Length: 383
Image 1: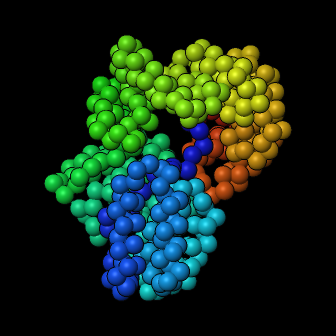
Image 2 (image 1 turned 180 degrees about the horizontal axis):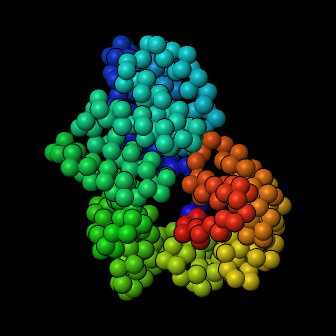
């Protein structure tokens, strides 16, 4: 299953390739603060550092409000930390001063605007244009890989990660574990030999701060490669990590395990874990969404699935995943027109983020409404 996402790691445009005009005009203390933010942005201790970086850059901007390069980096940090509202406000300030930006700066602004607007196709176009200006910037290839993965174009994601790796030289002191996790995911979902996905995930092992999260992808690749023993060992290691010190509620651990087996197309185990999630917390919105969606796709499960989804919506009426699931359930119940209205609500609830699943569902239902002879949409492989 694929949860609606706005990728937490939206890119490193400004970590390696900022136009430095505004930085050079800053007084030395502000210049040093900006340089420190860039370094931390490029190699964060963990994802919780992004809000801190955004706050520190705001302090620089209080004293240098015309430093638009600083503001561009702050926007990217805000997007990574999930603060889309503040990012949008900052975007307006940069847009008002766009004439002062370099050509590369203008492209960076367009890329961030496309990202903020949930338009990965536009993001890819502008990233490609920026790559013409910076052909050796490997981080742009990582950005392209992430954007292509948003569109489920995993072969293209693999291609750009490989191109980035070719540009990694002695000056590159690290490659983040999330990149190897994405590489492994893209390889597996593009139909490559699962053993290459195992190798890709293992390559992120050196990144100790984020490695435990990559374990999830490693376990999936190992199972897909036929190494159930290794996959079980990696999965148990991951579960131990997420349970440690109560990092994640047990109901959410069970949902994640269900998503794991769902991706492996082991729907029996997936369903059991989703039910276990609700056994731990019958009010779990994620549990109701996950089990409800699975049951909608299961022969004979539509009624129970719709009931769970409706119960979830009582608790979270604006949850994009649940709105999408309800629209899809109505479509499966041959009520395409009603389903389409709920899917449109799901799209609006994303708040500018992009979900390939919602886009696929909207396209399928629109086709059904246009031509009632259109066969049902294929089973969505991931949520």
